[in-house]
Image (cartoon, rainbow, N blue to C red; front, side, top):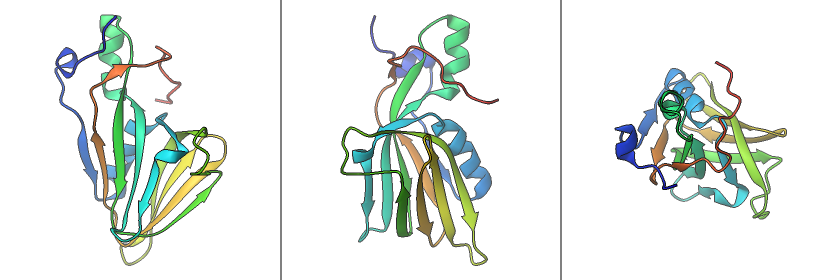
Amino acid sequence: MSDATFEDGAEKPLRLKALDADDLGILSGLVQDAVFPAAEVKWDRKGRRFAVLLNRFRWEDAPKAEARRRDYERVQSVLMIEDVIRVQTQGVDPKDAEMVLSVLTVVFHAADDGAGFVELTLAGDGAIRVEVEALEVLLKDVTRPYVAPSRAKPDHPE
């Protein structure tokens, strides 16, 4: 069995930007059930940027996979948050290279002045809270899709 190609789905890699809570809700749905090792969490304090390299389930492709009876796909994606002031974590040890985390939701909690924080809720009571001056989150696919190792579709509330 060979890896899937972009041409198989007749789709281009995702490159989406969230500038408000509604936009972020769409990105949250696309990264739900994404997995990543704790070592792939990076915060560039000087550049004021937070990023995580995710192995994202391709929810946008799942209906086609089901219709064509082919394997489900994942793709590596970068979730990047701009204008970062501070990052706090709970249940995440970036020094533990073996720790694998899974995204449940990504939400924005706004303050009165447009600032606020982006919160990534993780399976197993983990969380990453990213304080920002303004909401700007980018989701960008950075590899070709590949067959999901489990070959299964994660449970995803509709």
